[in-house]
Length: 190
Image: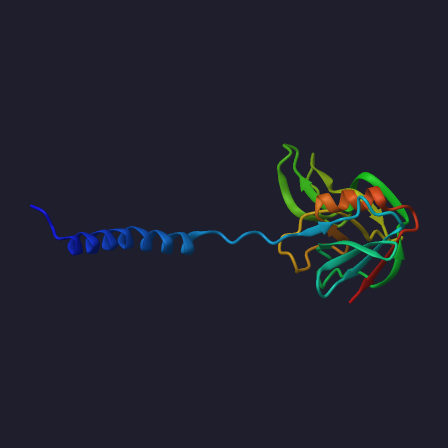
């Protein structure tokens, strides 16, 4: 039995819509949001002294070489109970592979973490256990009391998260470390 052309057209359109519409809805409803871009760096081909301007309210840093803006990055600075200081600073020290001597974890004798937010000298260490300082790659010290810039986790871009230091995405921490010299200017504004 042959169907007239108009019936076939209706069947084809109905079939296509029936297949396409639910699939499109499922994809739109279940597709995860793309992660935010954490940084932009264009400084490899630009000469001049590095300068860093950190805006605490935005949780972003603007990066300059000479007067030219060569990029930006999200940062994670100090939470309200351990705020990042504001003002004009300069890089006082650089250590490529540093661990914190103040903040980290406590592990028991078996090496299991029993305190994931430990303060050295304050948090109790069980017999056979030890304090392990948090890794702070590409450390650039800004104060005499332990605040600096370094590679670190940025859990929620745009929000504070640290014990006072300025955490940077690993790639940007490495680029700043390569370009910073002792005395590099860093300004931190509220």
